[in-house]
Image 1 (cartoon, rainbow over the protein chains, first blue to last red):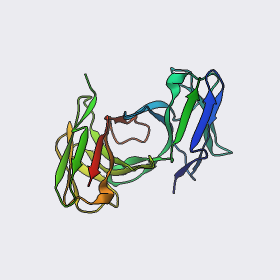
Image 2: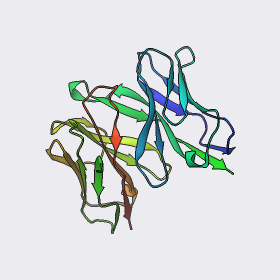
Image 3: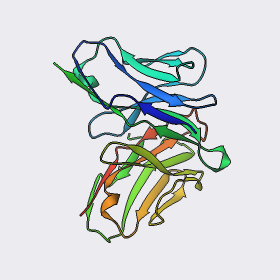
Image 4: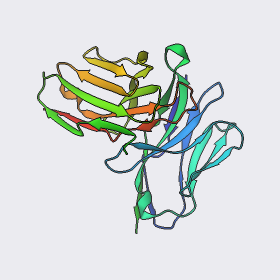
Length: 117
Length: 114
C-alpha cells in the first residue's frame, strides 16, 4: 500500500529565509508524486508534480521538489520565502483505488508553513 | 470564470437534518471527486465518478450519497447529519482516471452540525 508521511506539522520561518518541507512515501511500485498548496480559506492548488524523467521538478513561484527513489522522499524547497507563501502544504501520492483502473490521491497530514516578517 | 464551484460555501444545520452540497466544473473533465477535510486538515477521498459512473467508493457511511446528473456536476447528499460530519468538503475534477492527471479543487463547503 502507498502512504505519505509529512514529517513536520508546522514550519515557522522568517521572510527571505530558505525552507524545506519534508515528505516521505511508501510504495513498492512506480509512483506519481504531488505537492498541493492550500491558502487560507481556499481549496487546494497544484504546486508541482513528479511523473517521470528529471528528478527535480519546479513550480512557477520558486518552489522545487526532488524525487529521491532510494530515500523514498519528495521534499519541497524554496531558497527564499515570502509572506505570501504562508499556507498549508500537502504532499500526495497517486494510487490505484477503484474500478476501471481508477487512481486516487492519498494525502499526507499537511505542513503549515508560517512566514514571519 | 471559476473552474470548479461549490454551493453553498457555508452550511450550518442541526443534527438529524438532511442536506445537499452541489458541485459544478466547467473544465470539460470526465472525472469528479468528493473529499472530506477534518478539523486537523487531514484530507481523504470519499467518492469519485467518471462519466457519471461511480468508480471510487471509500468506506463512507451510507448516509452519504453522491449523484452525478451529468459529467459536469457531482452533488453530495447527506442524510441524518451527525456531529462527526462537521468538516470541510471539497469537490475536485480531473481530465481522466490516470494517476498523472492533475486534480482541480473547488473552494470547499464548510459544514457545521450543531
